[in-house]
Image 1 (cartoon, helix red, strand yellow):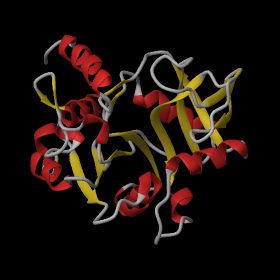
Image 2: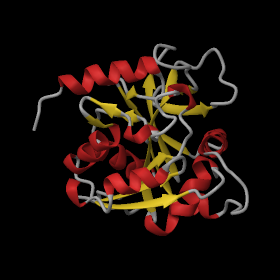
Image 3: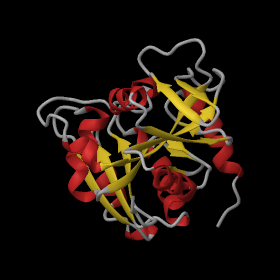
Image 4: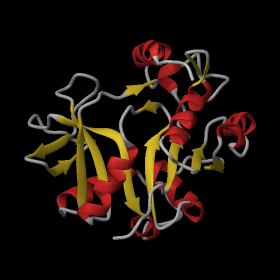
Length: 239
């Protein structure tokens, strides 16, 4: 499998952010202020520092505000394309399907509410080495930061199940994946689709690669997560 680093990276940022209401009644979650600036700005700066050039923002709720704030990404040294879900949310996989023309043959995916202090290149290299159509980054969570949903043993991902996790699952989807565009091309274009369901099916077929990381993730999807992420990003050295 051939895919040079950096690929394009898609950011899933179209959710309604109901857990952060009333904070997100008038602004999208991506633009919530964290450590002095919109959270998305921290993500974009990290992407640039890690060598990315092409970023695709999959937007939905109040997405026009993100477009106005980021533009084409010039302020961050990036080429940013914004793809809006339209009047009805299409789900995470549906949003990626709509963005496929901008993503290339293989691309990375992360969430618009997560800050992931790891090497993105290492994830890319694992995807190339394992030669599976998708790869998930996993963390030994043991229920600490969110519900564990991955059965991972001896370096092998045996099952990912977000809908119905089992008690023996001690790892969690870290929030950074890489996949082939071919996986999404086969999805129906007229109905919502969730990336979690696609990854669950792939895991049961032995087609979901994995790489384990040890550094915890930070997220702003909940008030408690927002507080922790604020503290973490505020403590990072300034450029």
